[in-house]
Amino acid sequence: MNFASIIICAHNHLADLSIPCISRVLEGTSYPYELILVDDGSTDGTARYFSTVTDKSFRLSKRGGQSRARNVGLKNAAGDLIVTLDNDVFVPDGWLSILAEESQKANVGIIGAIPSNETERLNAQPSQDGLLDFPHVSGACMGITRSCFAAVGFYDENIEDHDDTDYCYRALLAGFRVANTPRLVVPHLAGGTRRGLGHRRIERSARRFRNKYIQYQNILPMPPLYPFG
Image: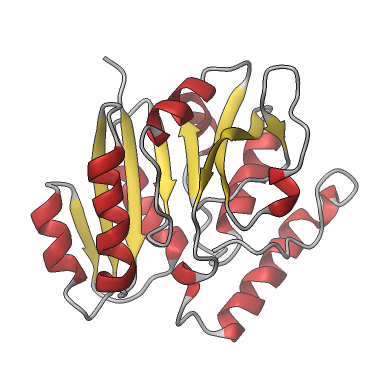
């Protein structure tokens, strides 16, 4: 039987973000799944709470950044569909079934929900099969097929911000389709997962991203200044 791996990473914000986010996953998910929780160096009891929710809970002793935390999740994911979910996203009932269904469409490597703050995507016209093809989707609620992960691999830990865009670009360059599904819109507190990440780290990451993809500027958007959390 197919199932999904849901990866949620967090740095603090246990009460206001992580607990409500995970509660919605537990209440609103009927599709078979495993839950992987990664504490990115929190100091507020996040690791202790995570260990009560799933056997697949992990902790980084100090904050390593979202890419590193997501990689811990990826290394422990066994599902056919691997879903990254930010702890500032609150999923509706049936959300994972929709992602799983849409991931089966032609050549899809990455399928994303539309965050509620993404007005451009909410108003876009889908292709014939109902998907919205974009060069990147938000990692706030993003499904990676097993075949895509096998080809693309892990997150680039040198990219601490726009790590989801980096992953999508790598998938595109590997020949996979990257798309949103208008069937799934998720409430998203934009920027919640970046709280406390210094501006210098974000700027350094943006420079690394640009240097990595400048050769593809004719086919991939530059720079990636999008309101993703």
